[in-house]
Image (cartoon, rainbow, N blue to C red; front, side, top):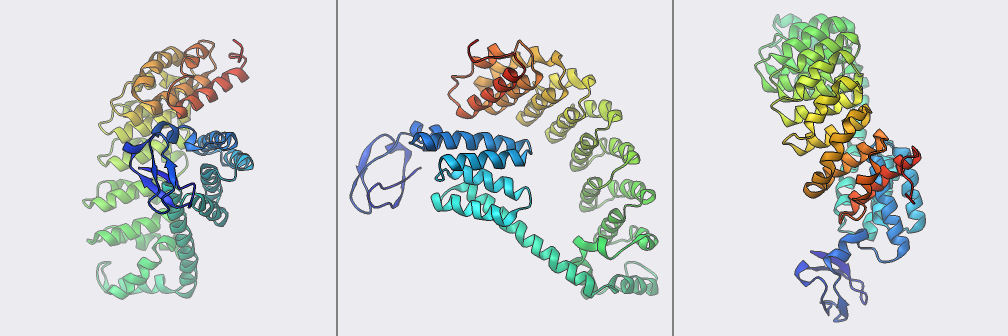
Length: 422
């Protein structure tokens, strides 16, 4: 559908794309309207004035900074775009995303509202606003839970005493007690300490999976290194699938040198989610001893694990991984290929330049997103072989790809490898 406003009465019109490029009359006021072509609708976001087009292009650049987690730069660029045209809904969206990711949620909500004032049918703004409102609701719930924790400070001790009197962690627990205990689940770290470790360890052997999960969660928040390793090992082999999945969440919270060996071991676990988390965490730690295991994970049966392994190797940045990552450029899964291209740009090994140039032209024909990642990787590598094949894509029909090629050439220009008149 083509969405447009009637130039006479201002009503929102939804017109099937088969009428693109034709003219007709408004269903509301009967005024003559010209339906824009699909190409005109898509190019420059459908904007007509030069100021609006400039603002839209700048908003697209700001969106790229969001993906790079450079929120301050994204916010600055979005504000510059809005200075060009306050009617650019994409600029309001980028500004809202940048503010929201900096926990300035009330300001972000205002930006999404302004985007929706411009276009009430703007799907991206609707989705982002809904997610932000959910997050704000969760924030309020956490504040309320903090009050609950203060009001029932002695609850956890009383539960332990009742369990002790019963002689079995699976006995003596009424639904009312567990309702309160579950209400404290996401703030359980506020009401327990190291003195609770023996009780919680005993609860790991309970015959009820939900009790094992609650006990494991509490132990993970305590963070005792003497407990974490056997805790994870036991959870990963638990017969209950939900307990095994919780192991992945706990892996996200562990740190330190002892964690590396545990995470490397987790790369071989049966649960796909655990392997993914282990790969991501190893990349975040920058563990050099994980290079070989992560290279092995590039051959995992799960494309999600292969994707996260490629990203982790890029974050670690060791050139030993260059050749295996180059191989991942030809993976059957698109997300793996994209992460591999990004990783090669991060590693910075120029052995990757020729393979990246080789896949650049093919990627331009097959998938613009992959081609964009390849172009950015070539820009990061700063090699004199890169400008020529990149310039060949400046006339590509996909605007997003042209923007990314322009970013890559800008990086090369700053490295004195590409100039506008060469």
